[in-house]
Length: 436
Ligand code: CO
Image 1 (tube, rainbow, N blue to C red):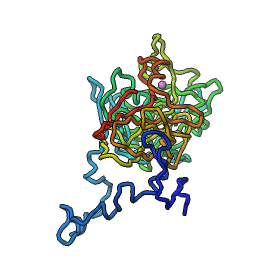
Image 2 (cartoon, rainbow, N blue to C red; image 1 turned 120 degrees about the vertical axis):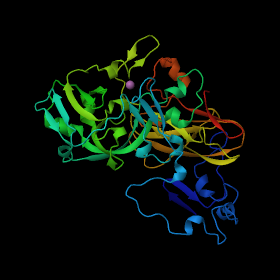
Image 3 (cartoon, rainbow, N blue to C red; image 1 turned 90 degrees about the vertical axis):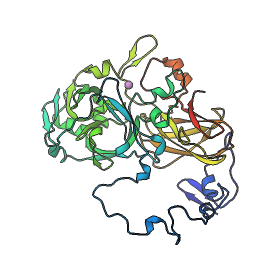
Image 4 (cartoon, rainbow, N blue to C red; image 1 turned 30 degrees about the vertical axis):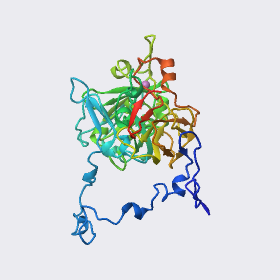
């Protein structure tokens, strides 16, 4: 008997669909058909009959011996999960400038918890009183407008699930001469994904009345660096959001409280946090943040400017460094894929260093410019292996190899690196960053 379960065929057959590609990659149905037999034991057999340390003579665990804690006003996670932390680092000689990175290897699905969303600050996190905050639209407009939070809250809002990625993400994963021995979050954790809720910027710009000569906007933050970027008017009028909520609650201070610009698919720096001003302009403003930073230096000494969209990319989050395999057998390879150009149409996985590839299953939902979760069953035979993933988006863009990127752009640039990530797994089941 077969039934269709989320696009994956469930079968009572005991037959394992082996090796759609080399080195143990398995057909996606294996987990549903063989749930009990993957590990060679049934569920009860795995639990066994022995009591654990937490259990008493009656076989009841300690936490069942008396009533639990009462209700709370604001939730906290289990203390057993306290090891799941962002990796934070400040720029040398500064306190507030720096970044913290999402521990991608400890998360599942596509939504990043607000408390683990990556941060990138250029002069620390301002503490902004929302009652004092004002937002100005001026420049080439018929009517300059100034808003407080109460006025903004009366406009119609929309909610969108999108990733945001710092354009400096993954630089250390591939643009260093030798592979850096770090975990997935440190190498790739300047990407996160949330539901963002706020007001379409186009509504506010329409109300201000944009002059036909205006082709750009300047967005300026209320941090002490007055971080500011130029954005094409076409993007501002297309899908830019003045975000006020993230995953259902108000933005956190580290993500722009009380309001930020959000530009789906664009490099994260342009989604200016703590937004205080949008100036409508004819030309880009050429701020310090888009001339001294966020340009892409090429081998010939010239730089690319205003390279906004984040390219198609993926990474296997499990197995990955720090998540050791516990002996030969069947594992699920799980990872995330995303593209600033659209939605993910396919992710391929290799377990033999890129010689052969199998198509991974994409978990719903598969959304435009969102993280997308992919999964693939893999029978690890206990021998050293190199696993990797490559994503393809709906524009046909394919995640490139490290070698092809370096051949095309050199190694001087620091932004928009999207090379295929390989993890080498040794015979003990430990994974490390490797170049192939
Ligand atoms: Co750029």
